Length: 196
Image (cartoon, rainbow, N blue to C red):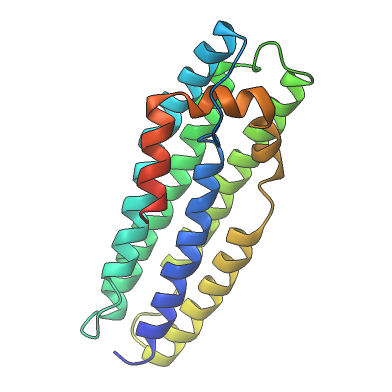
């Protein structure tokens, strides 16, 4: 299937860029932290984020597998649609994990940082839900139209993967990042996502 394969590879590449957003919440190193409360908060967030990072990685893998020459447009559509749904659900669950954990304790503007991160994760969830709908609306009976439509999806996905994750980065700055880096579930989420 000549027209769809390169486009779906582009889709998979863009998706792996998007998976990096999941890693932003997984901390970034450092091991001296002055707050047991912050460690407890980080554990809550990391424990909620880790399974979602794995879900995003699995969705990325599914899209990459569906790039073989013998994939029909219907197969590609079904796989991509499910992958976008899974990613949308994962970001929504991440937002809920951060919301449930509350504001990071002993951190300047912790409530604002939490609110912004939750909003950003919910926006990502909505964006992937939109991509799912767009993928489901593609015409699988016309190879050229399908490839063209898939290219549009890939372009939007690329923009989405490059869009800011500033609120997430802001949330995990400084002591928060150090506390998160100490959590086993954040370390395994980082290892999982970086392998994608």
